[in-house]
Image (cartoon, rainbow over the protein chains, first blue to last red):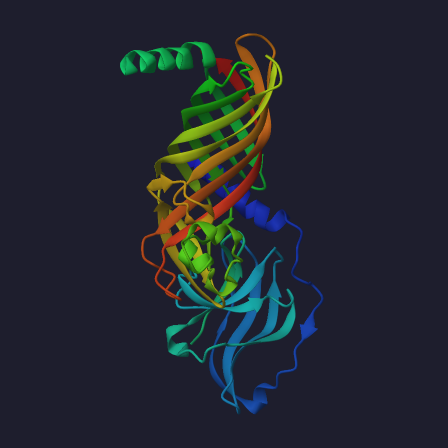
Amino acid sequence: MKKLSVVIISLVLLSCEAEDNNTPTEPIDDIFDPTMATKLKMGEFVGVSRHSVSGMAATYEDTNGIKVVLLDPLNSQNGPDLKVYLSKDANAGSYINLGDLKSTAGKQSYAIPGNPNLDEYPYVLIWCQQFSVGFGRVELQ
Amino acid sequence: MKKAVLIWVLTVFFTQTYSQVREANITSAIGSSQGSVSVLVQHDWELWKSKKFAIGAGARFTSYFGANQYYITAPAELTSGSTGPFVIFKENIEENIDTFLIKSPQVNSLNLLINLRYKFNERFMVGFNIDAIGFSFGGSKNGNYINGSQGVMESGKPTAFNILLISDNDRGSLNSELYGKYYWNEKWGIKLGAQFLFTEYTTDSEVQQLPEPNGRFRNKSLLIAAGVIYKLK
C-alpha cells in the first residue's frame, strides 16, 4: 500500500511538472512603486514538495488603502495552473486566490481583494491548483 | 368467471407475450484523468411477439476513480433555483455554483437499474440503462473548495444515498449507459458505448454558505465504455 501511495504521489508530482506549462516564463517588471506605499510584512521564498522557488514577497498598503502582495524578485520553477495564494497556513487550508502567477520570473504585484485582516494570512504561496501541490511559500513577518 | 379470465389473461401475458433474458456483464470505462469499472446483472423481459423491444431491471456495482476532478454545487435549488420536474430546461445559475476540487476521488456505488433495449437480430442490439436507487461508499477525501477568490481545504465522503429524480434533482452517484451489444455466440458478447456517470461528495461541513448552506458537490463524467457480456439464461 505504501509503495502504491509513493507511485501515485510521484505520478502526481511528475504530472504537475510534465504538463504543458501555461505560466509565462518571460521576466516581467510590474509597475508598482514600493516607495509610494507602506510595507507591512515581508519574507523569503522557500521551495516545497521538491520544487524550486526563490525570491522575496512583501505586503504593502498604498495611499488609497489598497493592499498588495509584491513578489520581487521571484524565480519559480514552472508548472501548470500556478496561482498566488495568500493563506492562513502553509498548506492552503484557507486562502485568498490572488490570481494566476503572471510569470515565473521578475517583479510582480497582486492586489488583495476584500480588504482582509492580513494578520490572519501570514503566508504567500505559489500553488499548482489543478494538482493541489505547493511549489513555494513565504512566511510573512 | 372473472377470476378464470384474469388467470387466463395473465397466463397468456407471461407465457405467450413475454420471454426472459438474464445476463451479467463487466464494463470498464475511461475518460480524461478518470475511469470506472462496473459489474451488472440484469433481467430483461422481451415484449410482444416480435420480442425486439425489452424492458429490464437489475443491479450494478460501479467503482469510479479519478485524478484532480472538479465537483460543482449539486442541489437543484441552487443550480436551477427550483426543484420541480422542469429544472431540466432551466439554465444554471452560475453565481450559485461553487467548486470542490478533489485530488483523487474514488466512489463505489451499488444501485438498482432500469434497462431498455432494442434487438435488431439475435446477435446485435442497442439499448440504454440507468441507475435508479441505491447507496454509495468510499473513503474520506481532501478537496479544495473554491468560491471566487476565496478557498478552503475540506474533506468529504461519497454521498451515501442515491436516487434518480430529474436532472440536478438527482442525489448521489448514478451510472447510465447508451450501448450497442454484439453476441458472437449464444452465451458471450461484447458491449461498446458511452457511459454518463454522476458521482457526488458531501463535505464534512457545509462549506458553501451562499445563497444557502450546502455540502453536496457533483461531478458529471462522460466516458467511453467497453465490456464483456455473459448470458445467464
